[in-house]
Image (tube, rainbow, N blue to C red; front, side, top):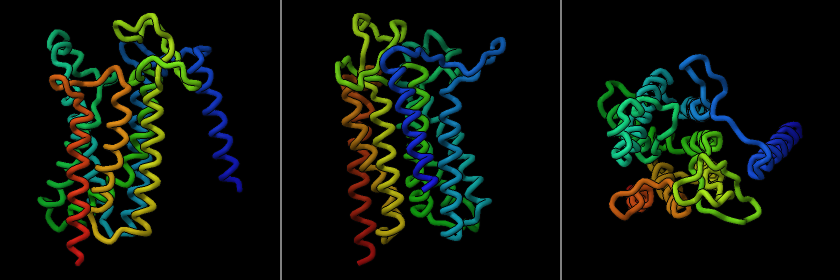
Length: 283
């Protein structure tokens, strides 16, 4: 009962906060504090918070699966480092015109600019290489991929709140009841006359929370083979991203194609095929 009341109170406070921001009555700052050239941004804090909570929950699950926690700690450390590197690299590559003229900005992660697709690719690569190259490893490749995929969506959902404070990752202009006010200086070129936009960061946050609940529930009750959770993550997360991405105004492009949608379509095909393969292995 106490947990339910705490959840309801937190939900009410969150709703009241968003109502003020979305109506433009409360204008957010991207900085928590600034000291000289050093600044601590909400963007960085929410990303670190998401990683920490996902890691904590994954560690609890790892104990139940008899995974050596020291090895898991080492793997997560590498995955976070290379995941952030991949996310930044992916973003910089598809925004090369800007970064070619502003090379120092490449290192300024606190200004925003991480592409989750790059993080996923590099993190998966880290998981696979570690499981295959580490001596006396206590888990299989698909087992640890399942572990990461089950709790990653929660971290992604939390990290999306950093976009709110940066006034980024919003969508097309809209007059829907949940429209989000965006200050003039954050509006893209050609949209200066519009005030309200789709809060696509919130759409993805809610979708990621749903994916997290589905995957953790499936892991506890319905998983028959390692690799199934990872496969479902590729399908479910990508499905939501394809739908939400079409609304966004800051998409990365490869020619005329949105890279997030293209990448997501490929992930769905891989995920569907891998899930079928892992299930057939049991027969």
